[in-house]
Length: 201
Image (cartoon, rainbow, N blue to C red; front, side, top):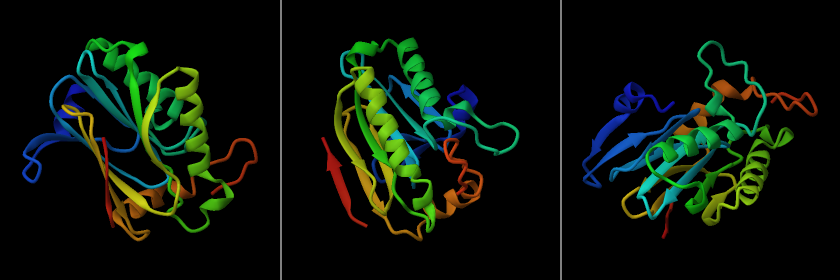
């Protein structure tokens, strides 16, 4: 979520990069007009980094599924679903001065990092959703790193628009974090349950 208390709780100073950073967890999003490093860890989830170069407003979200229902108990965030995560992030960016028609995107994640996940193809569904959503909204994709069998750590620098991607092994922390959700993800159509560093400019 992008509530002030949540954002403050996820904020820290990154000594390596010498910049204030914000962690974006699954089902959350963060918009800012300040120099920040937005950080998230992805398995089959997708993170979208949005920028408006004119206003200097940027943001990141982290969603689990395109749409549907997750039985994750009380407090489940609507931003866990791609269609909501995109609209919530864009709305917050607009409040800070961004214009929808100036937005540019970089998209990451959708890795097949858990054994047995091929039945539901969560990563493929997330990939198809976000490419279709951005095309429909006429938001250009400047860079992407999607699918494959690795987890990813994403570092988005809002002052430059650059993104660093650290690719992680299948037994990494990102994979372990996805395990609680694994048996609760339902394909509504079929009812089935279920490194190196690259620089993008």
